[in-house]
Length: 171
Image (cartoon, rainbow, N blue to C red; front, side):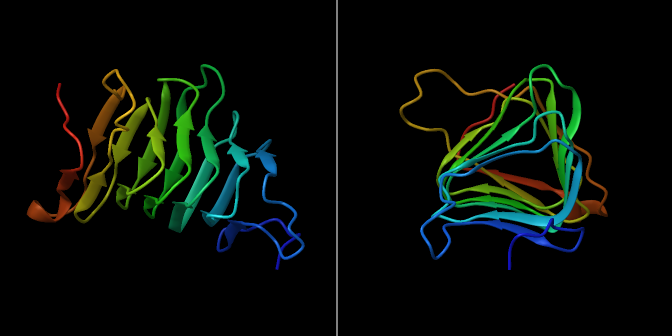
């Protein structure tokens, strides 16, 4: 595939193509998007910037193997990124432009590699248990902080917990 704009059921895939082009391409979103998901393969070395656009992803969520995904632009506020799926990072970078930016997800947030540099508010909206696994880079000399973590769980009793691992959280 390729060359067409993804729709609500489609997953936008960013990777090196067979002619060795496109590995370092950059995408700046200029309109709001509603896609099934985004996959940034290990061969993708470019960046995706949401700017002032809002991004809504379906159950396929966001998968980052390489490259940079940057949420927001300047002091933009509100939900700039929502997914009914999970965010999974095995590499690459996820960052934001302002502590006023918001990221909402119904699935889990798992960082096994790469750099998770989101300083805005993370909102967990799941109806089942959600995992929040991130690791602070050892080479950062200052503690990492979020503007907030909101648990807006909608499940019954113990089916809506946030399971935290990988780093310490303090208030």
